[in-house]
Image 1 (cartoon, rainbow, N blue to C red):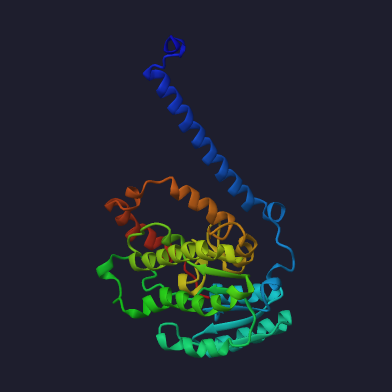
Image 2 (spheres, rainbow, N blue to C red):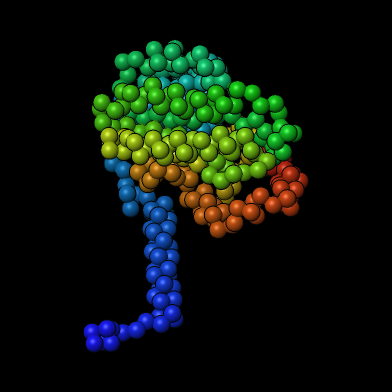
Length: 320
């Protein structure tokens, strides 16, 4: 008798309920994406960093690959925000010149360490050079692109351990050195520079894409381990930035100058485990995520990239 009082649900009713649940989940996901987008549009309103945020993490910032490009821009910007800076790079003359400019422009202390990150023997000297410094920020920026123009794997320059040492080992070793002193203080910020090309398997830049994918995975896993310790570990995955590595592409709507990109990206250090660094790159990433992976991996698109995109890149290159 009780069973007869219960409403009987038809297959159409179940399908209707299922579609309602799915629709609700889709709307929720869209809302989350809109909120994330609004954070990038209004960073100072949504989650403004206090002026003393960076100095509160420690007195010093360490930047690898600091001689030019993004590393130079990070060094300048972190000094402007009240940190002393340790600049690490291969070319001593560049380091000395940039260090003098930073000291004159900001009044902050600058220490330089010459190191070639394609060699595994540099870390003992780096660790000695960092002893006694209260390091609040590490920027793992150093990296190399062995084929500036797109090409197939077998047509690329010979692959050796330099790429692995510079793009992968450097980030793990530097993180290991500096995280050891951040953990007892329960605070610190580690920024690991990846690439938009590392967020999906990117043919024609295969080795570079794979090495930057490691940085993404390494950073997110490490953040899960150390979030409760009060340490922020964030992967920054830019698309187009005008630097020596990208042959000084002309800045535009998508391609940013190193200074523009760094200034904006440092406002987003509390926005999650992975950011694309600026509003334009965040929008581009959202658009690219709508495209199925098979499209990027199709032979037709690869042929178009090899010819049309190569010509486009060459036109946008300029002398520094």
